[in-house]
Image (cartoon, rainbow, N blue to C red):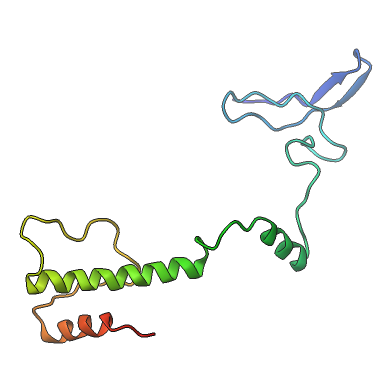
Length: 136
């Protein structure tokens, strides 16, 4: 079992201070730096910053780390809706015999909101056709 060293002797055996309790993830060795006052970790392992506290500070941090809009919740939802639309169109294409017999169909993860439709049922066929109509 891992038992960290509590204290560190520095300055030629003249100063005894608390040792940082952090350890490496790869070799599981304890950090060799002294811990900060009133904390168990050094400044490298998170002793200095506590992060933004106010809503304005959190918003400022989010804007500073903004790279692009490709992975926002809205962009993911829009991509999933378009994938669902395309999948239903592909199902209709297979139903009417538009694709060759040897080609593959429905590869990969199904988009959010996908329900298996039985296109031989007229109601579900009408539902699939209505889902392909653009709502914009």
